[in-house]
Image (cartoon, rainbow, N blue to C red; front, side, top):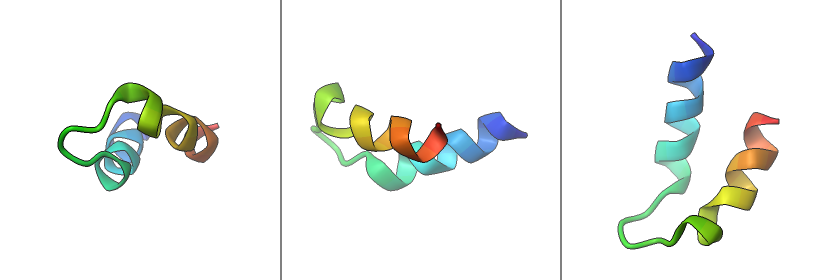
Length: 32
C-alpha cells in the first residue's frame, strides 16, 4: 500500500532528534 511506502520514505529521512521542519520538506517532495 502507499501507506507502507510513505512510511519507508519517512524512515529513510528521519534521524533521531530531528525536528519536523528538518525533514518535512524533503519528505513532501518525495511523496508528492
